[in-house]
Amino acid sequence: MLNRTLLDLARPGRPWLAAAVAAGVVVSATYAGQSLLLTVAIAMGLDGDLNAAVLAGCGALALVAVRAFLIWARELAAARGAERAKSELRDRLHRHLLTLGPGYVAEKRTGGVLTTLVDGVEAIDRYVGVFLPQVLVSVLGGAGLIGVLIVIDPAVAGVVTVAAVLAAAAPRLMRRRMQAGLTAFFTGWKTLSADYLDAVQGLPTLKAVGADDHYGRRLSDKSWSFFRDSLRFTAVSTISAGFVGFFAALGTAAAVGLAAWQYASGALTLPAVFAVLLLSHEAFRPVTELMSAFHAGQAALPAARGIEELLAAEPAVPDSGGLRPPPAAVAPEVRFENVVHRYPGRERPALDGVTLTLQAGRTTAVVGRSGAGKTTLIRLLLRFADPARGRLTLDGHDLRDLPLADLRSRIAVVSQETFLFHGTVAENIAFGRTGATRSAVEQAARAAHAHDFIADLPDGYDTVVGERGTRLSGGQRQRLAIARAVLSDAPLLVLDEATSSVDVAAERAVTAALNRLRAGRTVLIIAHRLSTVADADHVIVLDEGRVAEADTPAGLLAADGVYARLVARQQEGTP
Image (cartoon, rainbow, N blue to C red; front, side, top):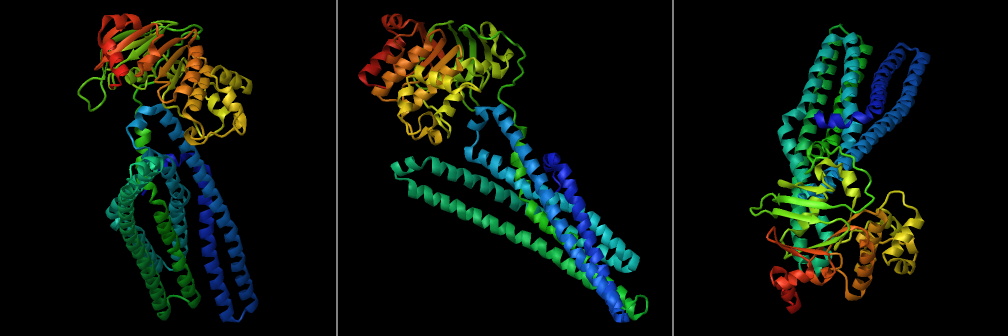
């Protein structure tokens, strides 16, 4: 149960947890003090000294009030420590996920990653705030109570010690089963969360294809499977709790029985027997509280595996570049030199010996059928992955020699699937440049031909666009993406099917905005619709990961090769 990963994650909350342990130990001391004062009250009452008995009873009541305050302080300190640990972990996970980049998320189920980031972090709350402090409180408090019993009668203290050790060790008898149950529980929880996220995000598609009932039954089956795993785990957990209760009751009964036998033989006084009765019960309190804390914190164990896996993941590309080139005041030249790239699990390379140049200040279009390798060019240019062979250069510098943040600050991307965050129009445009003023945001929107439609929105630039920009049309979302690119003022512009998802009317406005944005920049256009590259300075045709042709649009048409056949097919309406 003392997991090294979780102990490390608890480090930021140690000062508060130490305070919680201190308060918890004093709470245990108040239980011992209360038992002793009640013993004194009984003894004084038997002796006929009612004033002393009442005074001792009042002292016991005062300890109850003190204990209530200490319990409040303990819970507050433990909660502060747990929240500090969780906050640090959230920041750490978020920073690491950003370092891993989109390549990591592409290989994982989004719902599973979210479960680790949200539910996994929350799962450590009870472990850090309840279980860890209680371990020390149980050891220190239990040792203190047994120490008091040793003073009263060593034999009774020995019986209590043996029973307490057996009670504390009881959960280890079910350890393997409990770990298996916990793993099944968290795996089912993670999978079910991912499935429900898929159902919510894909609800329009499920309805459109009439698969909602089928998918619903599938979710129901998984939900019942998760229910059965939860019940099995609860059953095992309850058995271990029963063992603890059994040994605690057995130890208390044995201690009291031994004390009574010694009283009958004259070895103990009657007040001492009362003290054993009260203290032996209190001696098992730390163990039973540790068991409760054990059950409260055990969900963190499988969660720790997901957290450890995420933190141990290595980024697809190392951010080891130390070259600091001067700020890009002019459009750069980009070269792909004999680039080979293969995706894991695929036999054929996505790019196979590609050499091409994006000339400075010119527009280069890359065309080809689906799967030809066009999108892979962008992934390599942004360094979401590195080529297996060959290299990419920017103004003669190998991209691997540039810090990732510096490289990506020089590139603006407008793609066919514009992602807008849940926030205002102004906030989404301002992602193009940190700290941008409202005036700069509006100027970018005007340059992107977006100001007029933004002004017509209910709250203008303060209108909330909804998750993924669902309250806007495709053309409107595209123009916001262009405004974001304008605001970034990057010298290298990538247009990835930037007009393919908008209608004809919106395409005119988007095209006009893109033409304005292209001025003075090095531009890479990835296009499936070949009519959009007619004004490119240079066209490169990819076919099965290789450069098949390269020339001006007019030159390629005159050559009557692959490009000309692609144009002919599109004009005929053939894919």
